[in-house]
Length: 398
Image (cartoon, rainbow, N blue to C red; front, side):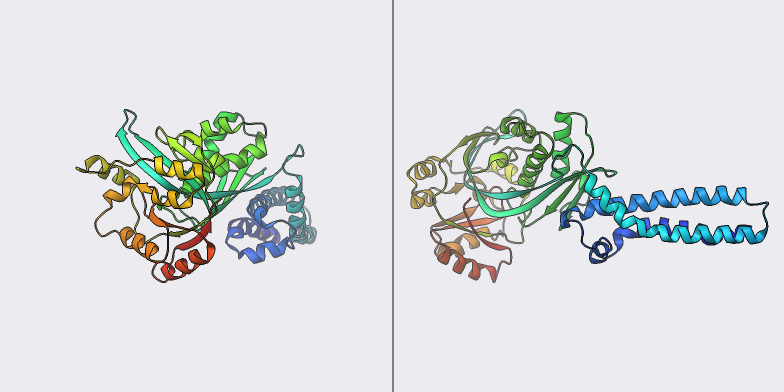
């Protein structure tokens, strides 16, 4: 009897195998199955639905096969063989129903007519000034920093769906465990504040900002996730409330909720808006070296002699809209405690030799930026630096 039903059970096993192998198939092939009927940023949701439908069909058909086999066990062998063949054909034909089922599932989610996907731009920042003060009782340092957003950015897409779990898809990957990424921490903080979660979220992160560079890429990505979640789930939420959530994630994250040019004080979470940067161009150079933020703060704590920096010259330049004054006032305390053999001083000199009004490291490094008055000079300098440092970018102020 079992030999008649073996093909039917084999089809069930193939459904299970398809559920396992589906994510490993080439992306182009997976999209072809749906005839490119869904946006690119919903492919992850489609993949989850495909796997779920494959699994459901496998379990359903295995149960049906077993019941029919038991019911027909006393009938003539010809009848059993015919029934088993018919069921096998139906199971194979059912595979044709999976693509339209997935399409309908994607079109139906989410409910209530709300947006299902939002894309946010996560801009990098540079520190025009960064003065590090005394260590506080909470372990942080007092800082005074003028930060401004620049046109180097990651793209963060947040999608809500009826899938099986929250997910982070990052190109290229930046952490071994996605759940440790600051974007996923932002997701958890948001729903802890908001309350019950109705569905699931996929975050798709397209990285362009170099990591461990002092450009705030991870913090900006997390802030972009918070902004995207607000659009999808709580459109009336204020920037202030979002900044309070951002402060739980890190000192730089609140800045990226609004961006622009600001004076940051405290541990970096107290923000005062400043006049925008005059029109200019930045050439950003990221050498191969990376600096541990904790190690750089420790180096400042252990430094025996250090010039005390302040932001007054840059603040005055911003108030007057004078790019030359801003350039002359650039300073960063971390540049005084660079590790031995750092490429930062050489990059600073190269940018100045290529016509930058001034140049310095941003944050705790290791990226360096040069400030240029016009695009032509900036692009020419970027071309020269890129020959030695591949991660060189020419961007404007935002």
